[in-house]
Image (cartoon, rainbow over all chains, first blue to last red; front, side):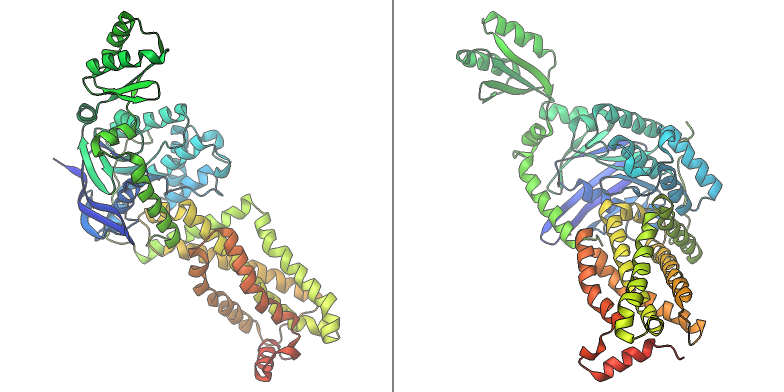
Length: 330
Length: 222
């Protein structure tokens, strides 16, 4: 198969902290790989290595067939990057930001101008084109970020937590734009903390924790492994807890977790819900709360790693702190 | 959809050519300078303060130090120009710091451009800003009676010397801390040499040689 991005045992250390401990990834051309993990799992570091912003300490990575270290300039000619750490100039207007990048990519002035206005139209930013980007809302900023990374029509696009901090409407809009890009043949590497986002957009998901890929597969495969949804029942009367517990245990076929007065268990079968209601009703249990929701990343984590995501986060904080003290990345 | 239909661009070369690098430098210098259009007060930042210093030193301190304001201006103006350079450095450091912390440099570095272009662009933009404030100060000086005693070539040389001597400090200033810390650090480290030079109560200077050398280097021949 033709791969746009391949990494082999990629290692990156920041002092004592190992941000990437031998990551293997392979992204087939024209597909979306979701890199899923908690803060500091190494997602951003991986994206930065692949964008030639960081030099790996071990292993190798190729993008579009070019090595990210030896052929960095050619790699940069293929990629677009947007997200947490790649941003636009706040003091320039939206149009100027896009014009700047077009000019830097060697477009003649008129072409760069035309490309900028095309992108502003695509991302519905024409009205704000002449305003300094520091006056933009969060959603507009992200759209401009994405537009900026598309000026050079990249073959491969890195989206580093593109929707973190966006409201639901802006998030849906951004997802739609990513889908259109993929439809046009762009390969996307998407890092995200949200299972739902990876689920919606990605063809393949790699779950990353403490610098290693701990699980990978299609969204369906991962869900089957982890229990895609979480069922929670809270009876009106605490005395009904044992009865609820029995019913949930029987239907979910696992030992449910009891927290306070809520009984919860991971489930894979969405048709379970009416059955739960029927059985509880038969048992005469009055339900105060009944929810069937997507498993949170934390739950997926727990089932994949046996430890909750928070632990990994503290390691992440170390990495961030380290990066802050180092100031500039090399 | 026009924005995304044409996928793929090619970079034939393994590294950008010098000519491309220079074009990119010019574009990045434009980026810094076009901000003045949106925020004209930035230009005021390094215009008002030097003007104020020229007037202050010449008319308030000048009489007391040299006895005559005209003679003192001849001595003070070059000093104020150097002083102004030091203060401009602060804005440069803050601008670089913003680029680094906000991720603008990451975006630029992920583009297929010459590695030195972003820094060169900033330095170029800086030189333009400095040229502006030097010309402004010289203009005011000329109005008030300052005359270049040697030649304009020496003046150009002095400009290049002052500009280039600041480059090594740049990396240090931009690499760490918040922009407020940069401001503090620059003000603290910059002020003593700044104020010693133009106001020059040199009698307290410890070494006679240093004092005389210092004076002679700036005093134009009559």
